[in-house]
Image 1: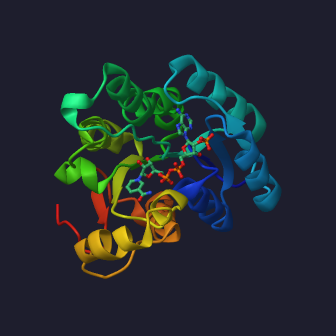
Image 2: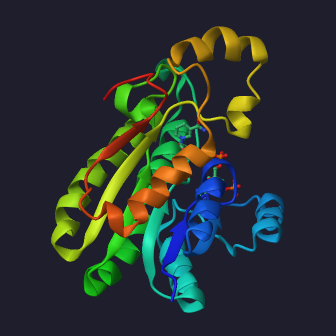
Length: 241
Ligand code: NDP
């Protein structure tokens, strides 16, 4: 039977590429999303991947969501914590709401999602947790105090869970993408892209969502069993952590 993989925010952008790549690699995939039913239903129609709506910032919704996926597909072996949001503002203008929204989705969301799958992974002696952090969690970014703090926290959580999970066959790793050509980044005016963003990236182009997805497929595989607690920088040479 195929191993079950859950991808949070798995219906759009990088998460959609991850869901599709895991399906192509033979996993039984459940793609979670927050509220964009139209995108999620189109994704389901196009790929045949089942979609599940819940908010990763709410602990009980995550526990209930995992219980539903496990009833439908079987025990979760792979968890990809990909869902993320931005609420950018310079620190002096950042509201408590901006801060709390980003921390509760991008950091607490990883606790909320990993906690319900962890006991089962420990019992079965196998698990893969792959956290999508960001280059901005490694280097900081003006206007993103909330996002950078959450993404840096994701790396700390990854390293701790790697230590706690190792003896139980669970690996936990983080991927830190740089600029990836998702809808959001491609919507940046061409002049800004060419004059401000591309010059920062030594390889001279944006990354593709599929390039992040291929890292995930590798980390999920049996071949990656000796890799845990790692942070993979996938940023075209923009920053060496
Ligand atoms: P998108 O904005 O394209 O997609 C975000 C996905 O996350 C959507 O499926 C969305 O659901 C879901 N989501 C958002 N909030 C929640 C929530 N509270 N509960 C459940 N699902 C939620 O994101 P990207 O593909 O750009 O980014 C994916 C990840 O990669 C994020 O963690 C991001 O921080 C990280 N990243 C992205 C980079 C980039 O260049 N794009 C660079 C570095 C890191 P819905 O469709 O319902 O809104």
